[in-house]
Every structure is written in structure tokens, then in C-alpha cells.
Image (cartoon, rainbow, N blue to C red):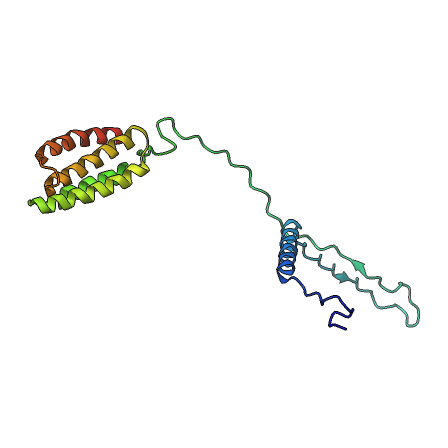
Length: 195
């Protein structure tokens, strides 16, 4: 005989993955029921019992009044605040815009890249090439955020900065000032598109 109790059949072991899944499902159902069932209201307070005082009997041994019967006195319910009257929203004046206007995606990043190039370019070809390379990388990131005409303009500026870097480092034998003129022409157009 085996541990399972019958000859020839192996002992069955629980599938702990299935047990865990069932336990999780049960926990989810319990949580859902606890969420959906309204909370129990507190049990009502027992009404205090008040007895009316009985006057002393006039003669001993003779009881003219029956014994006092406790009569429950209803307790006043606690004051519940009356619901506030619903507020009517005041309409915004016509001259006031409900939402601020947003700049197109990529404009802020492109503006930061151009400002960083202006700060970091320096006076040597090497520093200008490094700043152009960084501007290219930053503008390519901005181009990923941008769409439409703004995205096209940002990617065009990125290509121009890449070309400027190539000319400043000597990979392309041409005048870098030609690319600088193109950049100076395209930056104001990008700013118009972003505003």
C-alpha cells in the first residue's frame, strides 16, 4: 500500500498554485461584498425608563394609588444637520479663459536646447562643435515630443545643428557660417509656431 491509501494509485498532493488562486478569488469576493454592503448603523440607544413619583399613602395599609408603572420616555433624536442647499456654480466671465493655452509639444525643450547652445557655444571651434552636438541631441529629443509643423521645424533645426557640428569638427569641408545663417533664419519661425 502507498501513502495515498489505495494500492496502485499515487498519493495526490494539493496544487498550491490553484489553492492560492482560489484564496485570492475568495479574498476579492469578500472585499467586494464588504465594500458594497452599507455599514451597520449603530444600535439604537435604549430609552431611559422614568417612573413617576407616588405620593405617600394617606392611611397606612390602604393603598389608594396603584404601584407606579414604568413608562418609557422617548429620547429626542440627536439633531441632524439639515442638508445645505445645493450651490449653483457662478459662471465665469466671458473674458476669462477656462483653461490656459498650452504650447505645442516639444517647444519648451527646443527653447531650452537653443538657450543652452547660446550659453555654451564659446569662442573656439571645439566648444562650438560640442555645443552644436549637444543642441542636436536635445533637439532630437524635443522632436520626439512634437507633432506636425512644429515637429518638422524642430527636426530640421536638429539636422542643421548636426551639420554645424560636422563642419566645425572638419568632417565636412564647408563654411559653418552658412549653416549658422540657416539656423538664425529657422529659430524665429520655430518661435512663431510655438507661440
